[in-house]
Length: 249
Image 1 (cartoon, rainbow, N blue to C red):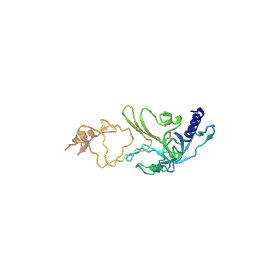
Image 2: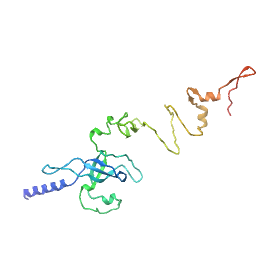
Image 3: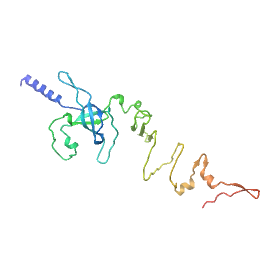
Image 4: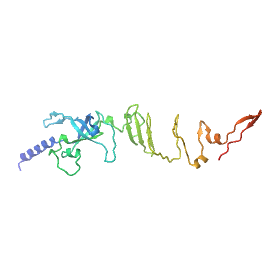
């Protein structure tokens, strides 16, 4: 076989391969359709031709963005202009799938690794924005824990951590709101270091065993002692007297 023929075929193959699109970095330029699952992305690394001429990519519109999500469960967080993503390009056109067709079907266009096949995976960022670096947070941070953090590097930073020692921690500079029919806490100790505890409950109940054997301390005073063993001084016709201790039923 002619060596020139082999070289020509190889060169043509490389030219065709370079026309295709492979995973690359991109930056979000618009989140206007994020509620529908789409973002606009600018690929940031220019394409180089065989003669090393540079060609910038256009902004890719309505790119589906991938979050961990199923029909019954979602993990969602906000995206903003300037966030980094990894662009990947599906082998065949996925328009019908994106529009809801999950059955076997033919692509609506027969292009291969085209720009309109783009899908974005969030979290591909420069190393200075590493989520593992403590200096990218305003509160104490341990990257050996599983951390969910919002409002990073602000005075509203909030964090939930599953720690390596088996403990869990929650930090919030504002209100922690829990809305539930029932809350069950099975523990040995509850410690509350706070200025005020407020409840709208009309009744606070506890099992008899706890009522009979435990106590509540308020401002250093025993509720049990002061409600079951206290007496009162008074006078009866000028004579000093002391009441009996309360009786229990």
